[in-house]
Length: 200
Image 1: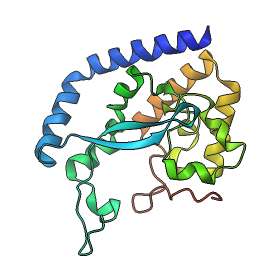
Image 2: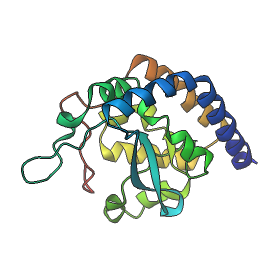
Image 3: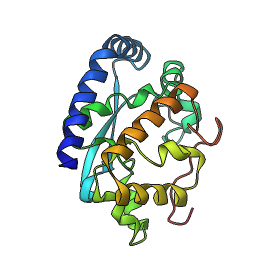
């Protein structure tokens, strides 16, 4: 019954949020269309429920600038002016509501990670994929990028073990508060969250 109610909440909340924020979504789309020369979205493969891959959707907040050798420049040098504003307000995540409506994600759950991280998991850490990934989660309201990967995984596993409608609603409320307060977005403006290497 919990999973049925959770899915209903995912669909209803996603549609309501998209409807209420549609003027803002249109504005962001126009600005990004101009800034990125027609490219609105960023697609990246992530790992979802039961470790099945899917394509996550975000607003494109960085350019494709490359160095002399053809490698992408560091993130801090590629983020656009519009993209920086969109990220500061956590609006780059809005298109993931499409992933939620498609059933690939939930509003609440462990954040979906890159495929390259899966072989680095401990046996216990694989259980973070026993539930659908989420736009926000217990780790995000308990530090987000300001905590270590080890702490993130522990928060993810806590959610998997204790998931409930009450916990989901609590996480959604805390996420709303933290977005308003702009807490824990990055470890610092110049040092974003470091890649997972299986130990950190």
